[in-house]
Amino acid sequence: MNSVFQGPRIDEAELRLVSLPLLTPFVVSNQTMTDKVFLLLTLRGEGIEGYAESVMDPYPDYLEETIAGAEAFLKELILPDIVGKRFSSPAELNCLMAPWRGHRMSKAVVEMAYWDLWCKALGLPLKTALGGVREAVPVGVSIGIASIEETLERIRVANEAGYRRTKLKVKQGHDIKLLEAVRKHFPDIKLTVDANTAYGLADLATIRAMDDFHLDYIEQPLAVDDIHDHAIVQREIKTAICLDESIRTAADCRKALAGGAGRVINIKVGRVGGFEAARAVHDVSEAFGAPVWCGGMLESGIGRAHNIHLATLPNFTKPGDTSSSSRYFKRDIINEPLEATDGMMPIPQNGPGIGVTLDRDFLESVTSKMERFQA
Ligand code: OSB
Ligand code: MG
Image 1: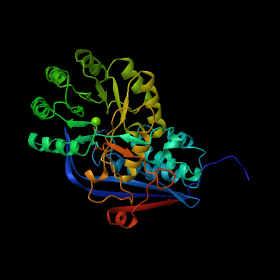
Image 2 (image 1 turned 120 degrees about the vertical axis):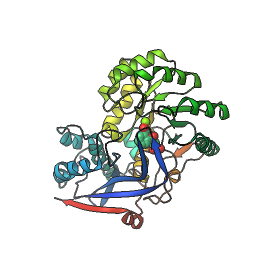
Image 3 (image 1 turned 180 degrees about the vertical axis):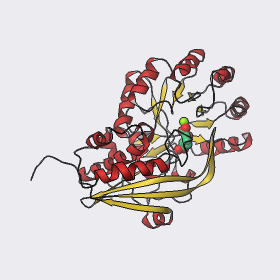
Image 4 (image 1 turned 180 degrees about the horizontal axis):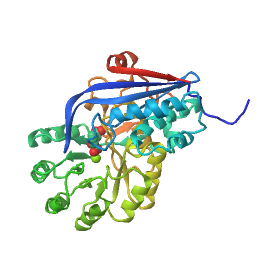
């Protein structure tokens, strides 16, 4: 027998369409979510299972990818091609997907499930395989658009729970008055805003006005593809710009930071196409002296666990969006609670890999479609 680890063989891939009701509808500048709808991928081989969930929305409102597009991409191009094969590392699996353009969120779900399977085959926590260093990760909350009164109440609840940063969703007409009210009641909290691309250069006066509220950063004020104009805005304000939607590759990150388009990076593993890419964005940011934090897409416990492991890397020095599962869902699809205490989220460690297990009965009840692929 060869003593070199050749990676687990993928005997079967299982793709589910899952819909989990959210406790509170989540409203951002251009969409409202009432349920978290996602694809759950299971890769089986050698008696073990690796899991990952997708982050694209049903419709192309955050970025271009959609669940329907992801299903087609995975079912027609990727899953039939990986079953029956083994990969010595997740990086080798990425080589197989690299020739296809775009579809980063779809590629991420495959790579992330293989990371889980691969770590389980090695008997290692995902955190260790990624090179993480933290025992727990600092987290904050992302508060969707609501009335000012409701927003103040949500902030009060989050502060009471010990969350380490509050991020408010903003858009035109729901920005300066909101910030005035929030700062009046909470003058000292660590506060940020996220516009999800709602503004343009024509809104420079509004963005300048945000500069007076001691925000830790202003997230993605301008369009997805507008690195250039983000640099113009960054020169006009003292508050750091944080980029989310604009950063899909390590090269995007290099260009944005070299061009002065921002000083902080939100890393979402799905958005950049997997952990290999997420680590590259992390490393480039670190080289520029730009702190990163782990974004969220209202993930179920599977994606949430992946995010927590990622956020143990050294340059994740700002609180992430990976708050307690119980803020989002009445019941999650995993057995382990993912709950923060005093704004610190512990690393799930019920076994190797992502360290959480599926609640199979509940998963069955929230699955609307399921398909299996074998060699
Ligand atoms: O921009 O981070 C974003 C949710 C949906 C789409 C975009 C974003 C978000 C969030 C949610 O802010 C963060 C979370 O998971 O709590
Ligand atoms: Mg964002």
